[in-house]
Image 1 (tube, helix red, strand yellow):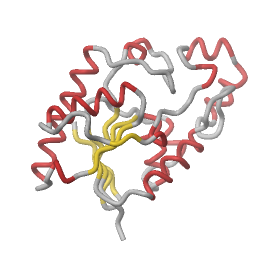
Image 2: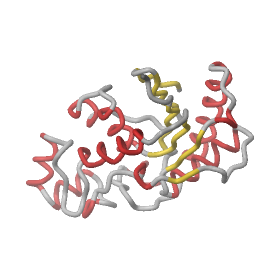
Image 3: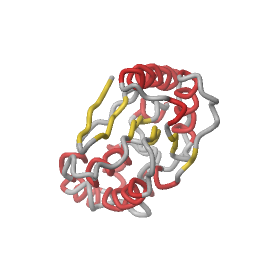
Length: 199
């Protein structure tokens, strides 16, 4: 039996995204471009729900607890003309934790931990810096979230959690998912064992 449909949005851009800094669990707010991307994603979602004949108010809405995801959700719900703060939070949707690399660029991460960096380059799914999570661990917690879904859902979260969901649902392999760019301002629709990106 197919699982619920998920309309998945990555949060809009932050200043650290623009600078190429690893955010992980740090709470970095959206920048002006990120707020525009979130509003645009709301318009795309509104059009998509209209085409699907869906009642936007009847769907479940859940966000990562990190501020950039919550800001995005509230801008999206504003575009949908729904009460902006009426959505759930789920910690299992938070971004992958980068541990001691949070706040660093990739070049700075490599300079700090060249051996771990080289190992992670060869296997992004199971190698992590000190104090960090692996993508394999993210995959497990995102799958636990998915397995509890009872209804079609709009989820706002992160690139890392999107990759984890893709692998846990058999839509990508760890090797392919680790290299995928998850677009901001787009809607990823997980439905009937398939994935469609609408932007």
